[in-house]
Amino acid sequence: MRRQLISALRDIGRMATAGQRALPGFLVIGAMKSGSTALHEYLAQHPRIVSGKRKEMHFFDRRLRRGRLWYRSQFPRRSELDGGKLTGDATPTYLVAPHAPALAKALLRDAKLIVVLRDPAERAISHYFHQQARWKNEPLGLLEALQAEPKRLAPHLVRMKGDALYFPWDYTHYAYQHQGDYAVHLRRWIDAFGRDRLHVIESDELATDTATALRSTFEFLGVDPEFDVPNVQPRNVTPGKRGVDEAVYDHLRQRFAEPNEALFDLLGRRFDWCK
Image 1: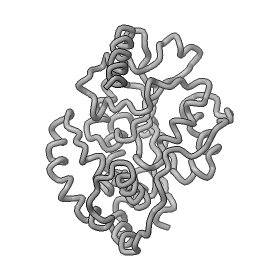
Image 2: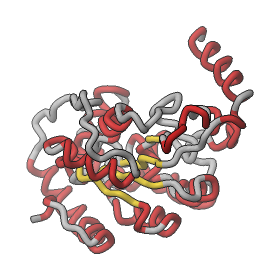
Image 3: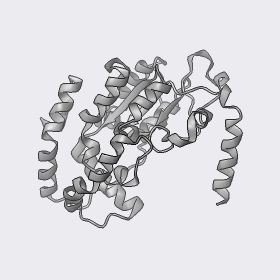
Image 4: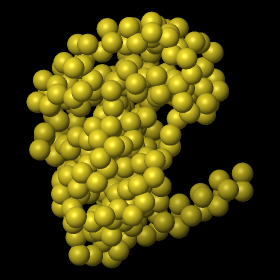
């Protein structure tokens, strides 16, 4: 309670200076359990990138009611961004929030978009175990949860289409497979911002060839691409998979066969997921 009060008072203080603050020049829009936390930490080490108050602002999905003044108040003062410095918002659920692209475009007309994509089958499994480890409220086994997902999400998906303020907890936490329908989600962002403003990072490359992934990302953002990030330790790693049955992989391979092809067609880039 004390911590929440202190945070609320600080927010009030920051809102008093909102007019002096910058809006983000880039958004890391997702995907969940694909490396966005690590990417945010790596980007924040660049001398030309200044972090906002928190990693995940959630303005364009959960906190729209707080208003634009609140959102602006979460970022550095413009005086801190001299010499071409940037600030950004890394909220991985933006990718799957139906109204987020249009809302973001209306406020951040020239923002650049970064997305980290992971094999959606592995992402779904990691998401499930993260749900169990952190929230401890998934009563179903892995395959059962995957099979139950469409019924769980159906009423939320209908309501979300017409209500930009509705972003339910279940949609984020139980959408194990839906969040991996990358082409569906990315089309909305591309329609709003254009393909040239989207930079795609493959999560395995970020993990195994971090320097190359960061170099291309810094270049996309227009900051020194040769900067050597000093700390590239893994971040927000989900506990290891525990006895995933082959039936789960069979289910997920079938589930994502067409969505993966749609993604490759959309981006003009084939990943290793279905070779």
